[in-house]
Image (cartoon, rainbow, N blue to C red; front, side, top):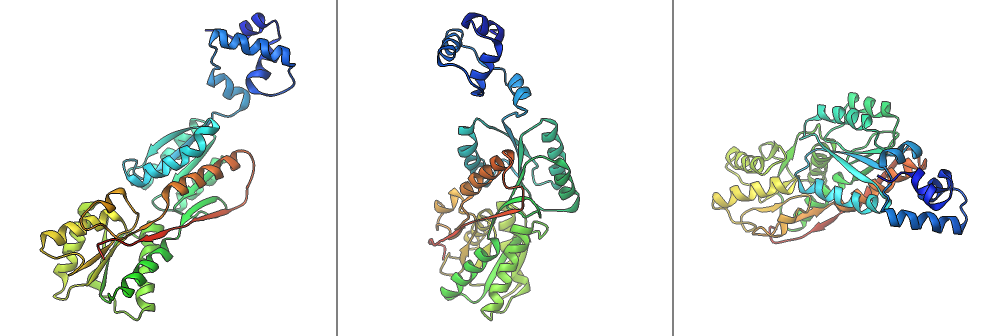
Length: 329
């Protein structure tokens, strides 16, 4: 393996000059620079990342803590992050909590031990031990989807988006609207989306049937079971169902089909998240597009600014959304 010392000897310059050329720092005459670059090309020299990180005190690695790495939301988020970070020479080190909150702290400690330059966290819920651990990290940090005081946060307007979907259903003539949510410990998807549903129903002077409000988990099977529970709970049937994720909505759709209920003629159905599958199922699913890739790009831009010492104060970047009307309503 060729060393900096050997390159310096072949180019007839000092090792300091070679380092300046490699790091694009300090003055080097054009003639000396050409000689160094010529030797680098001839020897196919590749700088050691470990040695480089020791000099710059940067590993060029960003840690990402994701709630479930196999989901489309996570892949779209990472795609957006990579669009910004890769051209800047950064790699992303992914960790997967598998929706287990205790693993979030575990992976934060792991990433710190790996000396990452910054961390982007897509958290399932925010609790005191997690927040304390984040504050103790003392490294650049950005959250996506949840808000932590004093940090850079990229969030979605979960509350207003849900209200918009309920209002859209009302405009389409639906007054009896059921709701499939998730645990409210997840503030964004669980608490804020349910709050948006409840407030929109009240503002439209609509009765909320308790048996039509069900709590599931983040998968298709849960949507199937929640839809069954809603229909089994009362002789009256809702005319529309809003699920807080497309997966839950797709599960609900499957149950309705098996029960011989026509969508949207008998019961209309809406989801949230604009998954790729939502436009290919039959009928195509009305949903909310939260612009996940944009959130990834914004999180990456914020972490780079943090690494460079910019924006040390609290930042809340709210990502836009759009309602996509399809055949399920």
